[in-house]
Length: 320
Image (cartoon, rainbow, N blue to C red; front, side, top):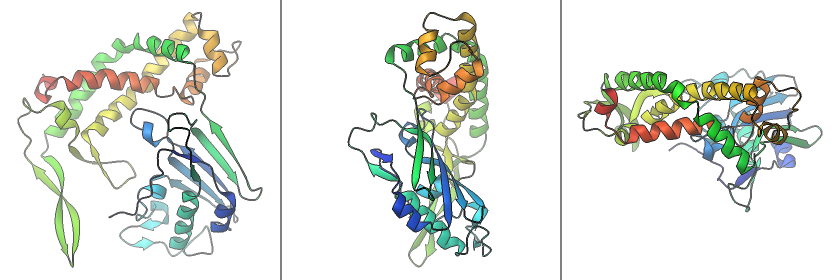
């Protein structure tokens, strides 16, 4: 079983600086980013997405967050390989590379503390900077729009949804055809001897696609793996990739129209996003929305509409 540390949902970023400095005396500063809020990462927004560790020799180590809290038995690719172990040559510290990574993981674990105000009441940070020389930290929080403006923005984006129907439908059918044209992939178990059990790929024949519901199909595994992570994707993950591709396009189209049309609620939106009404730029407005609590709005709209449409059909009906 993998060594996994998953900060609970009611944990918030509140680094214990003294303990971090004790774990990392060879580090001057740490920069972290957190997962964006979206339907697929709503329960991951308290997790570190990336971490940049600046050492006293001015070397910087950039780490994917999954190696801090999920794949804690795996070696980050810049520090070695799982097959051959950690690199002997450590350019960051005088410590052994494996020991250094263990200390970084220990420091990660004391960056969080429990909050009792409720998991959806805590403002999640976008990023944070820890200065171990000054023994201080700063975090950038997401802005939350009022319900009235959030609803108006949601409705505004929904009006542009039909513009992408044909392209999204083509991509969905391409994805499903590609997956079902190959044998169905599953992860089975194999006896490694001496009481150890491993996983191995198993390929089977797909059931009748005219009878296979999208719900059942979406739960099945793909032979594809997550980029940069040793874990297989689900079919639902692949659908999420399509939504991810079109979400910024929908947001861009809608915000361009918003800036051009200048509806009466636009000044209030700019005010809540802390933007100047005298310099309205599509790019700046999109950036501010993406950094807010409503940053997942386009993703949420696309996911909800298409997931509902797909869930009412079999795979055979979708491919027709």
